[in-house]
Length: 122
Image 1 (spheres, rainbow, N blue to C red):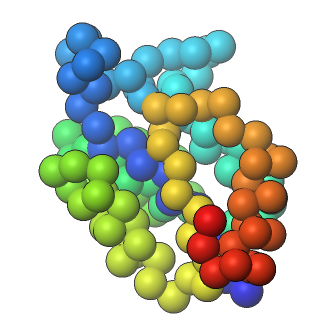
Image 2 (image 1 turned 135 degrees about the vertical axis):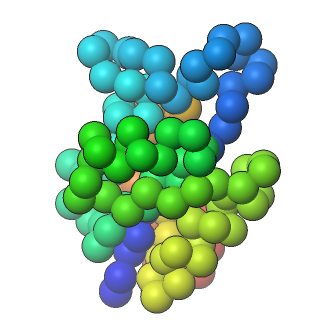
């Protein structure tokens, strides 16, 4: 079973009120999205991980994570989710998480994947 993780990080952070989107701000020495990425990588359940990124940051993110597929996001969360799903077209299960929400845990990932196997969607 092919499981793909999709981390959405294309937002502009308008409500955050800063020129730099919140997913790129530092938290405990890493960008917020990198906190999420680290949990996804350490979970060891994903065949691949896709970062759906704002076009202005694709080159920077790709250089920092050359082993990860980085694709442009859309105008809103729905469009970015669709872009990620299209990039993961051959996956049996996709896990989508917001790169600006760094406190996901391996347990949350595992439980959602198991529930998706049983119910088809979670």
